[in-house]
Image (cartoon, rainbow, N blue to C red; front, side, top):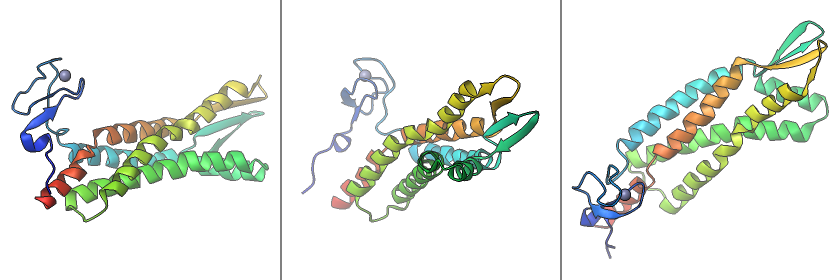
Length: 204
Ligand SMILES: [Zn+2]
């Protein structure tokens, strides 16, 4: 049985007010915003942003995220270096939070989105329910990866013991913020409906 979809009736929904209108009209009859049947060049845009995020992920991990100035000597530390240091200092729970938020979450989000693009592009026979759940998870979990930038920001504000000790954010903090923002935009430009379009085609 083939279900009737808006797309099969040549109807597109407005991105802003969700009104259904003929796809041949370029502007929404209600609010006037531009209308598309699907997000334009969704896979290409998502892939381009994912590649950018992957490249930014390298300086985010290699360069120091935080520089500690102590008695005149500056000590830079990377994300992983900070995690190891926290474990050595006996703060394993905080180390775990930082590791999950700044290593596991961004990487799993990148892999999940790459995988979804691959599934759509290769028309892979995968479960759409599962893939949709994965997409929602990637969208939800992504916001928590910014925690790392907050940790540095809070430390910078808190630890400022005169000339004795100071903490400065390193270049990696900027690269890391870039990774988080670019993957957020990548998730936004991915159109999950593309996964279901395939299923509709296969059913016909
Ligand atoms: Zn509209």
